[in-house]
Length: 387
Ligand SMILES: [Fe+2]
Image (cartoon, rainbow, N blue to C red; front, side):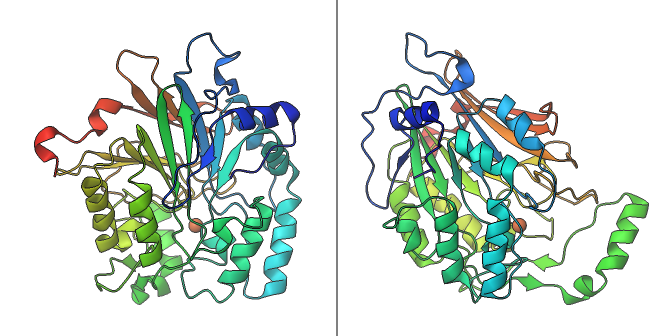
């Protein structure tokens, strides 16, 4: 479950709303009243028809974090922390524990958490260290520290699964929004790096800065059929989770799903896993699926055209404090790049004649800098494509 905010009105909001845990194989009761968050002011007489989810990633605990004021002003119903929520970069237990204490002391972030319903996943830096995967030696300890810091109950399944993956749902009037939180670190196979590129990193950065030309990272797609991003336990859970009914499904992915050719971390490094997810969405007839992601230290919006499914949109917001201003290639990019501190908004609009999803990437002043509207009707399986 999301952490229960200390503010009494927000506690009531959360209790009355249906931000509910959807454990593997079961759906929590959804007979609670419709969600009544602050984005639309006082609840209207009719049923609720809008939902605003904010999201972000990459918050360095040693830096000021004024962006939380702008996120708060955008009045989200829910915030999703997409990982690198602090920078642990720990090779030993004492350092990891120390970094968690530093995270707990970031008052602007923690004050926001006290007031706004939220969910969280981790990425490499708060899981353990840069680009870490399943071989990170402190991962069991890290899992428990994560669950402690994010208010997971002692019997939370996130404490005992092979990773912190989880799912929730929100009821918006008659519609159900499923939020899927995969773990892309705990079971991940080693990355396949081009060592020559890695060794000439400084020269590559300088060349890119001087030329303004994109600079790809050093990771190559892993074609070994045994390589995994999720691990079999999590794949089985995801298959069950996608059987639960939903009008919209939001997959909160710590790394980019749709981007292609960045050379940095992303689902594209595991093309078999990427295609496995596309096939699973198709096999389960899971319609209305979109991705939000982080990690890159810039914001952009990407899309994979899937002829046997529907377009898979992926809005990336990164970072809350971290900024990478060297251009990075991405063959699936459908927006400009925002190389400045940013946060994301996903507005779900059932109040329009044509229901709509609207992605916005906002700067530190809260101004919308990138925007993409996606009609919900475009995220449906066409009849002739149904399996
Ligand atoms: Fe990351």
